[in-house]
Amino acid sequence: AYGYRTARALAEAHRGTVMETVLVLDLSVAQPSKFYDHGARYREPAYRERVTAIALAADQLLSEGWVDRVVRLEGEPARTGALAKRYFGNRVRETHDYRGAPITAYVAGMEACRGRFVVRYDGDILLHQPPGGDWVEQGLAQLSAERRIIAASPCPAPPQQRRSGGFDDLAWFSTRCLLFDKEELFRQLPLAD
Image (tube, rainbow, N blue to C red; front, side):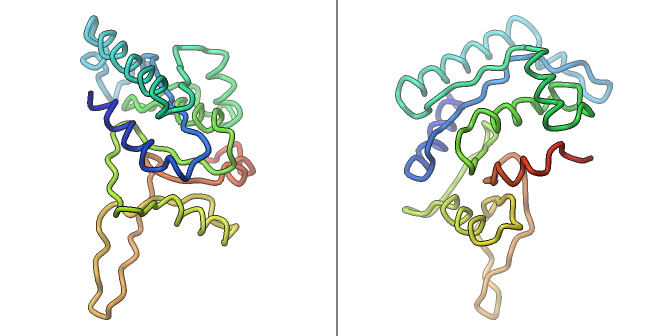
């Protein structure tokens, strides 16, 4: 229920701004890591039950029109290898990072989106905006006005008012929640370390 509600709220927040909403499900198991014990996360049958519930929620979001497409990644070495080569020059050979974060899902989502500008969220991001506000519209204006800017993230907390009457800029950026210019990013490929 949490995943469904979160994905629906994020889709609803930008429905008037974006041309399509793509949901990426990484249903593959992270590779073993000496830094992180994935045993509890992938213990069967609980893991398969959670994955099934998430896939059903994605199908519901699709049938209700909250998302336009669902992209499923399910351990496809040819597909993930091609993505690794394009984005990372084959320096990254795993589908997940050492903590289990789905690296391949990030780039598969970029590939799947048809527009020049892409908004991406991790599935557990909660978003608050003032009524009628949309941080993506502000970000698009900045990306369009300044070609050197490739990406923008929303303010992670309410702005703090300065004594002088202005607002402090927050130096925060995350791939968990961002808007980026896909064309400009693609000019940088493969991404450097």
